[in-house]
Length: 286
Image 1 (cartoon, rainbow, N blue to C red):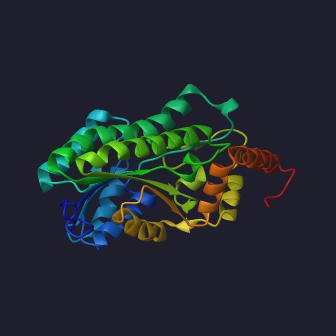
Image 2: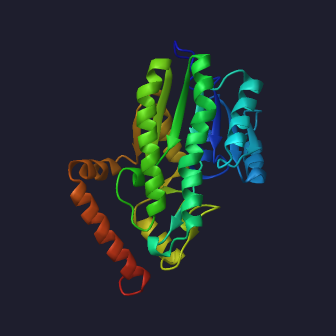
């Protein structure tokens, strides 16, 4: 336990949105193994409850939550405080993707991605931050993506939302330190989760990029297993790192985009052209 009262991780209490699968579930399992009580909050309530039961030992609970509903997010956080008397960690992790060119987007595509991936994070902050200030400690961990640190053609709405999550997290961290509250942002590279196939359970692929092409391109990026990602994350979260990039080799790409944004955009444009040719069947994946 830290002097502030924050527990890392034995005896801690954590709410994880998008906790029924992927990174959220892997974090829940890893935290429970380290002695934390975890709330797996997800729209997939049956799956959340099944996974909480698999964790067992009374260390996990599955609750239904749609992060687009600000009142529901607040009620989830309030119920956790009421049950446990504290909240050490809020993992704003729920996310979806819409894959395809922006020319094929509808307004609903923008609304769905921004609503879950960015506003869902804001609603989590709104629910937990003031309560953490009152208790004198807490750690908000927001899941962004490498797409929040570099251009991401074919997932423009996702990239826009994740850039917003990075900016929100860094700005809030600057404020929150004065109140004893920590803020970190996770920027995963390619992790083997349901979002790789069709943008997640509630995401989708638009016209122009077949699902097989998406899977093949993802495999070329050497996806990390979600459990391995979570195991690598937790020590860095405990160390209060600001931006957590895993797998570590993605840091080179992040560095290149910071040093030369123009180069980063040029590389992304080349990737876009290549992926279009692959999708059209005129070129094989590299």
